[in-house]
Length: 345
Image (cartoon, rainbow, N blue to C red):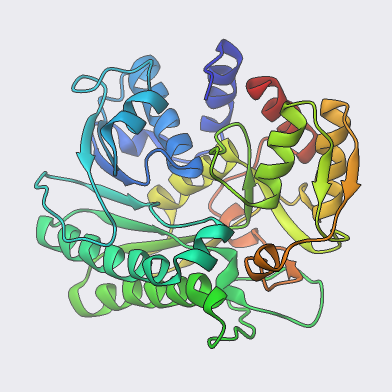
């Protein structure tokens, strides 16, 4: 991520879309997956509030490697602006710090990882979530937010957007189901901790997130399109791109997470979607190509690539429930793509 002054202006804009954001003053927040596409965007918002609005929020950023965290947040001082905690979602927790809120954003979110490491993918979602829920229970924290996925919905027969209680079919004997199946189970675990131990949990289900915080290792279509375009190369599509998706710019997704953290109802799940960015994969590719002045070309996928494909032809989401909390998205597709290209090129 290359920080530019305009990026921080964008951060300030999305903060205006978070109801009751002032409730985070003086809070202690722990974020897993802090260098990930979404977790790092949440951290950026909190950094801005501390630096410019004197929020005095204590940030614990968790990841596998300290070097990655320091590199991602190179303009901020370790030990002063944040604390780093080494964390592996498949292992027992070894740290001990007081915390008000936990945002659990650590998870494999990469199709290649689903096909090559399905066991690790499932364990990270289940074991990692259980360990953190037990931790916040013991620390008597205020709230636990779980970052789930639109893939929990499974397949449906029409192209209407999913509301939070629409569930379709997932083939659990396909190893690709390691991701949606474990996300489903982790959601139930969150609710169960609420029922049995009175742990306050909320769940968010992002659609397809894009933006300048993509990782070099991300093999999702939107990330590959972006990297091709930034490098001045043609965008390569491995399908007709007719699948419908809910796309959301990273900062909008991060502001939605904080909106739910502060305002969401205990035990509830919320779709994260921008109603102005529900388009086909092909439409996204064409918008990125237009903005970067490159072409879209089509190739046949390899068998390995096919195995990692999202099994849902439609994963568009209805975010009415989230919007009723007072949240709104700032970046439509055109604006979000333009910002992505601007900050990465």
